[in-house]
Amino acid sequence: MGLEERWTDIDKLLQPAPQSRKELHERVVQEIAQARYEFPTPELASFRTFVNVPEVTLPVTTEAGNELTPDIVVVDTPGNLLKILAQVELAETITEERAREAWLPYAELPDAAFYLYVPVGYGGVAKGICKGLGIDVYGFRTWRYTPQGLELNDISEPPGIMTALMPPIVRKLLRGV
Image 1 (cartoon, rainbow, N blue to C red):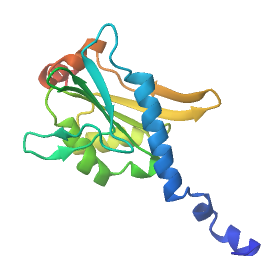
Image 2 (image 1 turned 30 degrees about the horizontal axis):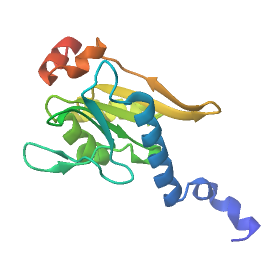
Image 3 (image 1 turned 180 degrees about the vertical axis):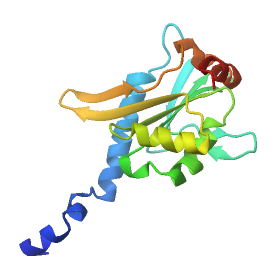
């Protein structure tokens, strides 16, 4: 490609390569797991965090027997009782199709809080998709890299931190949904 041709479609030149996207996703998932889901803690000594990127370490099975692999899974041991799921998305994966395939099944899992992490600037889009499809996300978060490192922002929050441990019907009542 010559110099004259480079500027004919600048958007294509600026798109990251598929390998770069995969590496970015893996990096963000690992850093979010360390920043927000560093279990066990003294308060929650029986909680354990599993990261399913780049390889699956703890799949989640639905009542119908389907196997799901959210990016981050937090369970209460013994028994691996599902407590928290987190899915990390890149800008190009925030679509209605992705919401139906991944976010909806995660949100429908009983007794688990589902968090959705999207890049800064895409929170409104993700919320709109979820609202349109009736997907109940416990918490929307945005992420971005700054010179200081990964920055995470809560762009929605239920009434209290302990609400994550409550059954879904109670969480809905507390939010007024």
